[in-house]
Length: 217
Image 1 (spheres, one colour):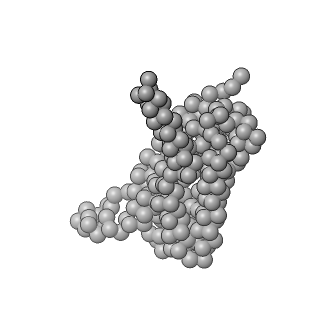
Image 2 (spheres, one colour; image 1 turned 60 degrees about the vertical axis):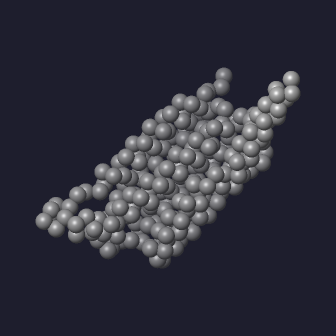
Image 3 (cartoon, one colour; image 1 turned 90 degrees about the vertical axis):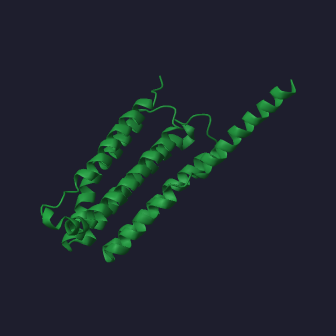
């Protein structure tokens, strides 16, 4: 009996929504309203941590859907791995808070950037493990995805491991540079995966052919 992964996706969406909402709760308004503008300006580390983490979690959400769009069944291994993934995601607001506090105080930036990067590196590791497990011998994949698309998705997930690891290593030496490298991950990973683009084109092409055949009859 195959287990529909729709419930896995719905539950994951809920956890992601909570995590992404908790980020803003870590931004505390200034106590001194007599110098409110200055107080708001000094919160820039919180804005930075919020923006970077929010967009990265958004990428996790988008790519989680990309992955589960092609998984036809979720067995107990997938459920367990996805639970580990959600446990890490629930930790991300704390990592963002530590990052903001370190840059606000001027102490511990290296540790904060490494912690933040490692939290997202673990997300990338779990994405790769889930995708490898589901796609190995196509044990859990739908029949609508071809080998080229499987490879394209896997390649994108593996690149995340290297990219984030680079940011972590640089962050241990130069915190600002490490954070810049991790933040540079954001615009690239919002680009569509090659396999998705190809699938849309093929589907559109088939639709056009059916329309043409219908016009001739």
